[in-house]
Length: 152
Image 1: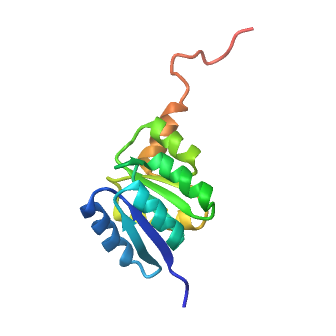
Image 2: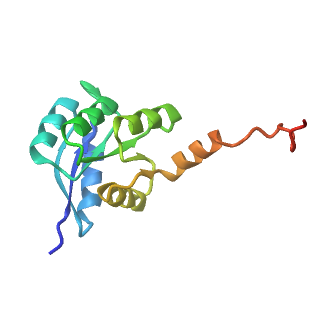
Image 3: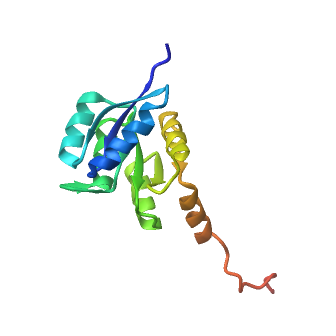
């Protein structure tokens, strides 16, 4: 029997955690091993349970997801952190990646995207929400008013 991915959920909204649990536990290769709604509880339980992947919200009581991600990665670098948030801005993305997040997913994503992101994070790959990829790409586009050729 193949080992299931062990996932820990961190979100301050119980209904979000319950929905995530239902989606994840429908997967044959995944299980939720714990959950919490605040940073202090999350960090204590993650240290004890040692999940493969943590699903981390950014806005949390008693702290924030960026600092919590840093703490998880410093204490246990082998644990992957997938940020799941409403924040669709470049600054939040950069902070999450700098903190050690393996992925950045928006809460408006499809269920299939969440499942793919969890598998990618567990495999050690980076995963970014398609809308976030588009945002990053848009910041890299050259301005349209540049000349076609540079003159000497």
